[in-house]
Each structure stands twice: as C-alpha cells, then as structure tokens.
Length: 298
Image 1 (cartoon, rainbow, N blue to C red):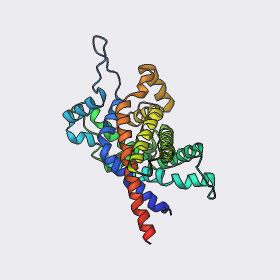
Image 2 (tube, rainbow, N blue to C red):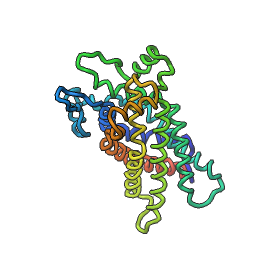
Image 3 (cartoon, rainbow, N blue to C red):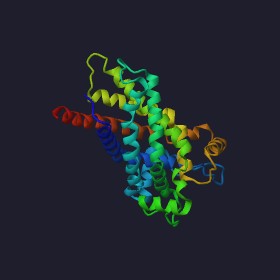
Image 4 (cartoon, one colour):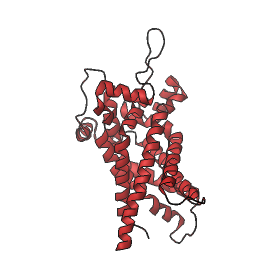
C-alpha cells in the first residue's frame, strides 16, 4: 500500500522543516565559515574571525546574541517547504518512471542516483529564491559594526532584492545551486535508499529507527564529501555580488585561498547535514507511517 504524491509531499515538507528548525544554528556557522576570506595583518599572518564550528557559534552568539544563530530561519523554512517537499516527494514517482511501473526487484543504484539528480535539480529551480534570501540573511552578521543591515526580514528581503536588483536576481547562483543540490540530493536520497535496503537484509535488522539512524548518518556524510566544493561556490556567489559567474568564483577562490577553501566549514557542514539527515529521515519515516495507517483504515 502506498500513499499519494500530495501526502508524500506534505510528509516530506514537514520532515524537512522540522529538521531545518533543529539545525539552523549549524547551517549559519557553515555559511559564515564559507564566506570568510583570509584577512592579512601587518606581520603577514592571517587572523580569521571564525575558527571551527564551536568557535563560530560562540562568536556569533557573543556578538549578535542567541537570535543571530537563527538568522534566515524563516527563509530556511520557506526553502524546505518547497525544496524538501518536491525533491523527496518526486523521488519515488521519478524512480518508478525510470524503471517502469511493472519492474520487480531491487532498483539499480544508478537509477536511484539519476532519479535523485533529476528531482534535486527540478526542486531547486523552483526554490532558488528562498535559498538566496536565506544566505543573504545569514551573511548579514558579517557586516562591520555600524553598517546598516540591508534587510528587515525574509519578506522584506524578497521585495528589496526584486526592487533593487530585478526579479532575475532571485535566481542568482542558480547554476552552482542546481549542481550542488542535484549532487547532494543524489548523495542523500540514493545513498539513504541503498544503505537502508542493504541494512534491512542483515539478520536482526528491519525497517526500524536504528536502520533509519544509520542510513541517515551515512547519507549526510556522502552528501558533504561530494557536495562541499559546489556548496562553497554557491554560498559565496549568493552572499557576495562581486563574482561575475560560477567559473569566476571558482578560479578566484582557488587562486587566492587554495583548494582547501572548498572544504571550509566541512566539520560544521557534516555536523549539520548529518544531524539534519537523521532528524529528517527519522521524522519522514514516522510521519509516512501515520499517513499509511490512515490509508489502511480507509
């Protein structure tokens, strides 16, 4: 027995929004670390403002208050409601479309990866404006003291960006965002699907909370390892308008900071994505069971 696409969308959007609420501070720390550039001092050393995930969280809380850790939460919820609902909700239908409705047996991994790549790309094309506003709001805290903030909140940010930069500006960074979200979505959904399927074949394991926990952590790890470089480029392009395009951002970052710049914020990114995936998949599996019970009762 299966639930409808609309019910799957609602379950996915709810699970994604709940995971977002739990992990926004970690995402804010990740974005600040990714946007941070080397700051030269008189003696030739570099003194970064933010050091590590815990140090970044502490610095933000000290300088901006606890609320500073939750900047962009409204835009983040907007994003997850649309992006999370679509990318997860479309995954099973697209996967079925690729293999055919009469397919029997375990779906090949490459078909799962292709389905997740497609749904991730489709979802972020629709949700890009919410992602842009989220990054802009999260990057506000790095402005010098005394410099007025550009946006009063998420809704004001949408209107201000359209008024000052045009409607097309809402899709700034769409190229790296499609690349990043398609790749990360494939790493998350396909790996979760495959690992969950594998674990459930081990004697003593079943469709349990432990299985969901292990598969969710693995999905988060794969997503960060594969998606970090494009994630850094995406964050920089959305948070800083000085880059002409994706390639320009990539080359300038590589030239001035080296290849490790593309893995800035790796630990907070994994901490965030690992936690996010565990919370999201655990919530999703439980909420889907509620809908499934209602279907069976009907």
